[in-house]
Length: 84
Image (cartoon, rainbow, N blue to C red; front, side, top):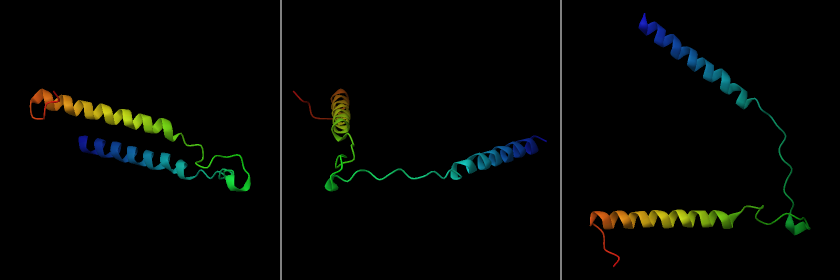
């Protein structure tokens, strides 16, 4: 009896997920308009307005933090070279 209950529950969840995800593929919207072309006198930026500068600073900060943690862990365990 317990096996039937588990299999029916699994079947119900599987069918629910299949039918619930069918609505995702049914969406058919119109595509967005093309961006302005700077070579033809448009006002749009060449890179499409992507904020590269702030993303670079974020990844540099992450890299510095990761490197500092690795140096700290190496010095704490005594396996790495000492900085002093």
